[in-house]
Image (tube, rainbow, N blue to C red):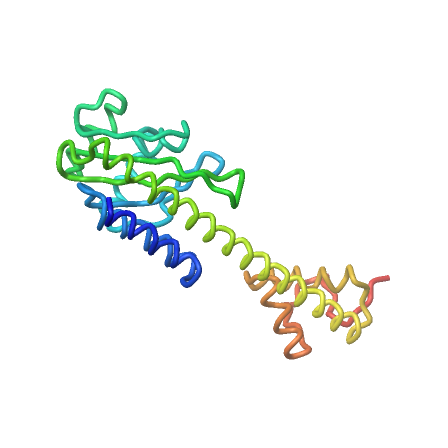
Length: 243
C-alpha cells in the first residue's frame, strides 16, 4: 500500500510537468508496476456508442479491448456503461460475459480482469474505463480492487487533461484555418474584383478539384497570391466577374 501511495503522489506531480498523452501512458504503466497481479492495462473511451482504446501497455491489452467492442460485452464495457467496478478471476467461465470470457481466455490467454469506470470532467458526452488484465486466475483480490481505485482516480484526471488539451489544440487549429481562409478570400477579392461569395466558391472548387483541405489551399493563396484552379467548360477564370 505504501508503494501504491508513493505512485499516486508521483503521478500527481507529473500532472504539472508532463504532456497529457505522456501522463495517460504513465498511469497505465504505473498500474501494471504497482497493482498485484496486473500484467497489462489499458484505458478505453466511449462516445456516442463507439469504444476506442486511448492507451495500452501492449498488444494483448489492445486485442482484449477490441474483442469486447466486437462482441459488445465484457468487464470494460459494463464498467463504462454501468458506472461501476467489475472484477473477474475466471473469465473463461464467468456467466456475466460468456461469449467474451470464453473467447478472450482461449485466444489471448486472459484469465482475470478488473475494470473501473472513470469519472471525467472534460466532456459530458464521453465516458472512459481503466482496464487491468492478467493471465493468472484470481489475480485480483478485494484489496487490489480497493488500491486500484486510487490509480483510477488519477487515470480520470489524466484522461480529462488529455482530452482538454486535445480540444484546445483542435480549436486553435480551427481558428488558424478560419483566419487563413478569411485572408485568402480577401486576397482573391482584391486581386480579381470578386465578391466574398465568389472568392469563397473559388476556394471550395480548388479544394474539391485537388482533393485538398480548403485551409491548405488558402495558405498557398496567402503565401503566393495565386490560386491554381483547373479550367472546366463553362467555369469562369478567377478574374472573371459574374453578370
